[in-house]
Image (tube, rainbow, N blue to C red):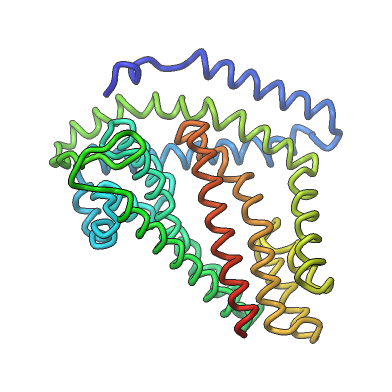
Length: 352
């Protein structure tokens, strides 16, 4: 553990909390709808829950690292990460991402800080982790969506999966081309892997977590609390709704018939099933064809999901990673995701 890790940034936390309270106070005075009850239900409780989940993810990630379980987890995805030259630690984070994205990102950040992986490895591994993240909620969403949209929903899931496989393959090929495991490169390239840790005693693991966890939680709270509060205020003032509606109308008037506007706007807006329910109703009524419904669902995904990611993932990314790196990771991941969905949508549109 570095010397700087031993100094807890209480001063920064105080400034962060003070700024957040000023923002909340301004919103309370500015908007009549911001009652104590509303702020408690929609801001304070979700923020507290987010910090709890981040803390649990940190505990899991640091337990895996401190206990020396990295090699065991790395075995699951070892062939993929050997091919892409990303190493066993990134493979372990990939496997962990099937259970907890927060824990996987915390592991990547700790590996990077300790110079066990490079910046490029961190970025590529974070992009690779979109693959397990896709399957985290798939069982629930699949059996809700298919009864609502039938064949169109099945085609939608197939196309999103094709886009996922395509961008994962691109990341693997880029890693194999850019990362050279047989020599040491600089900060923006891939360093040679250091030997993985051996297993430690239970007491050592607990001691390591006790030393590292308070500082990590405080540093995350310094960024998560004010960013989450600002995002909440922007959303409460209608900023995200206006952006989503403007983008939806642009997509509809350029590509899709006006009848699909409700599908695009509702898709993944507040409650993800609303877009699929609207799509199924319009399709059953004969207003939209199966092809138009699939394109509308993809358009809704492209329009709404990046905005939703900024609302919900931005505080988490900027808290776990540094603010600049967290923003870069989020924008890169969402940009690659949107490009891949647009690509499969265009191919589907022209071929079928």
